[in-house]
Length: 258
Length: 308
Ligand SMILES: Nc1ncnc2c1ncn2[C@@H]1O[C@H](COP(=O)(O)OP(=O)(O)OP(=O)(O)O)[C@@H](O)[C@H]1O
Ligand SMILES: [Mg+2]
Image 1 (cartoon, each protein chain N blue to C red):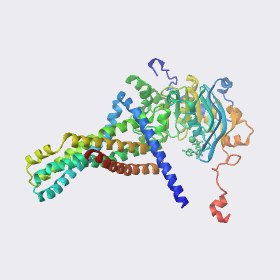
Image 2 (cartoon, chains in turn purple, yellow; image 1 turned 90 degrees about the horizontal axis):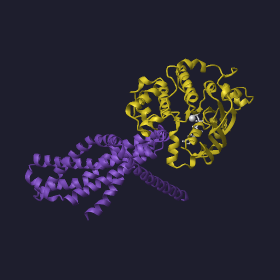
Image 3 (cartoon, chains in turn blue, red; image 1 turned 135 degrees about the vertical axis):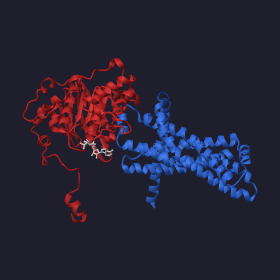
Image 4 (tube, chains in turn yellow, red; image 1 turned 30 degrees about the vertical axis):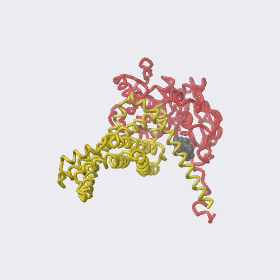
């Protein structure tokens, strides 16, 4: 029994320590972000590897999610004779929730895990420590561009996800199930509010992008520098990102839409 | 580093190979001509004062002290796992001693601010045991890395500098290769080129000779010597290759079990009466130096505790 409490205490302490390290790490990274202005090349390179390489999976998933929404929405709405509202339903679901959330989850799996593995391996092969000895701060040179790139890429990816999703909903609703194209579009335009829906969705995706990338780079930087340590860190990135995104979504939704 | 400050690298590349055989000469019984002018040790560059350091429960240094003179080649030798790499990391400020002080140019490394520490490191080259090349950059970009980070040299100038250093290690033809495409010895040579590209005032070589063929080894030995003799770079050489090391070192420090066991000129060491030193230099398996990492009684461990 005493062991249980001792174990619990130790686990809590180490979790708190990690959180503390995570925040200090974040502050040091943010301090390095302004330096990127002088070297935009670094950022572009990372934008390519985090953003562009996640593009395909985001677009394909967005299309399928939109198509499923079209099908499901049609079945439900047609019970009430409200098929014309399919456009607004699909668009609101995507812009408010599914766009930011699903994109963040996919982003964590695709880009986040890759970031953790890359940084963890750089650590375990002494590349980070080599940089330090060359008087180059790895937090500024390696971490800051990656964090910034994730931060920029996520909202763009989420917007693309929503756009492609709406296209998918349109294809299924209008093309397949015969909903009137004009009313699909006009209801959607009338029902989606720029500030309440779109802007809040964008804020969500920025917050998720920030959290996911932060977790990913921190896990990599803090990884135990062995193959086992790096693989565990990669797993943790995906799990912690998913939990953080879902919990944060609940909080943000509560603040924004109630 | 500004344009005007560049020191012309003095190691003429074409000449480096012809010195190789000389360095492979037997150390014992042969007085070294290089020793005489350097016998007097002058100003201290790095000094280690009563440093203790432990990893977990294992005490690696127990109040170790040594002085490393400026502009000389100092060799640090000792059995595997005694903490030679750890010592270099303490000097580079990547590890902080539990007690005692590490001074470089009279500054205590552990107490420097990050900015001052980085200023100091720009003048310190370090060759990592593993090479530590950046795997996402080509050989050329790896060597150019410190220049790009710390100077605003024009591109053609960077190119010349990098090619010159790569030529010195015999890899000018390998510029486009990625680190994954290099052999271990090649990677070490690229890392060596990178560590000298900023023309530092001191270089720490962690096992520069392992995994090199005899010809390359001779070239690298000569290169290290030339960097030191021509440019006066303080060189700290960690190596197990007794013969090569003793042939170029001005001063040798043997460490074991967290202490300095013996220090002196190579010839003094070779002539030392200490059985420990003789065992190490001659590579004898039996003697006062334990070959094994501290372990329980073998009988007990092999047979299981209850049989003991
Ligand atoms: N990251 C670490 N964590 C814990 N212990 C370590 C770590 N790195 C090294 N050690 C321990 O410190 C001791 C000294 O290691 P170090 O790498 O300095 O040895 P070395 O003298 O360079 O050996 P070699 O000649 O084999 O390179 C070893 O006993 C090792 O077990
Ligand atoms: Mg070592």
